[in-house]
Length: 370
Image 1 (cartoon, rainbow, N blue to C red):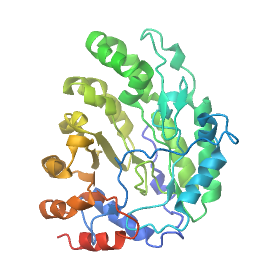
Image 2: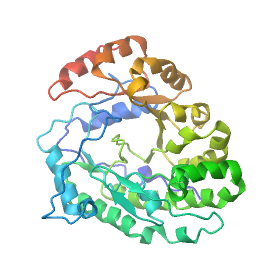
Image 3: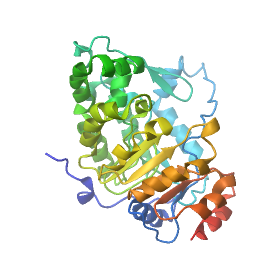
Image 4: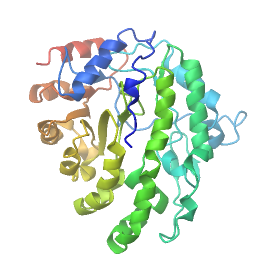
């Protein structure tokens, strides 16, 4: 049975006292999904593919390990609230807290341990034998990482009031989950040498996705929150950000065989879908991704070094727009004018990293984009 769409049940969203224009901004986002423009394209003053900061040294008097700090719900909320105190949220930049234990937490809901660094976490593979999946057969909603994310979510909902919204954690089922459980090198070898043995693992990787997504979505809707996650684009309804970063290492044939069936299961019942295309390796599968009618937009993330400037990727971005999909893209301020001169504004969501105080002048430039 198709999951019920929460938009029909909880249409009201808690207003933000910290962002008086939130409703207008959400209208711009909704128009963007349909390649329409109300007054200007949506803009977020943040670079999605910026490099991590160095992090904050561990206070050994407070925590014995980095893991303890990550698991300290009060600290995580205090740090987030400190980071937004006194800030002005320009354009389509929103204060949204996302409960976070790193990008592989979905895989860890089943088995294994997360290893924590200052600004991210890693997951060590747990599956050594494709003929024995017993290590992964527990109920993911009984796992301690799941319960920690749930506790963080509840605590944030109790504290946020009208100061900020709360999103759901970063969920990566399907191919990336399979690669985490098995190891990237092993999963690639499996595709070539033992593809028939991957069927059960592929099914397991997406089996509980909607149950987990629906659990957190229901928490948000009951509290009057929009749907949002790490990408920080809040929407009414149900927003999902599918991805398959490991697809950068596989052929289109293997993508169609080992990623597309699970992707189609993920998309069922979603109101808004933005596919995260992480670099030119994943972009080799772009035609298949664009062919999925439920996907409304592409987040294009070019790499570092030779992958810049953004102007070299204009043909790819036009290809996305030509397929009827919108695009979310990082544009450096020094390339902004050239970008606007050569791209249509319809269907483009800009992420622009600028210094504090520059936002109003940048917005004025974007408002002249015709």
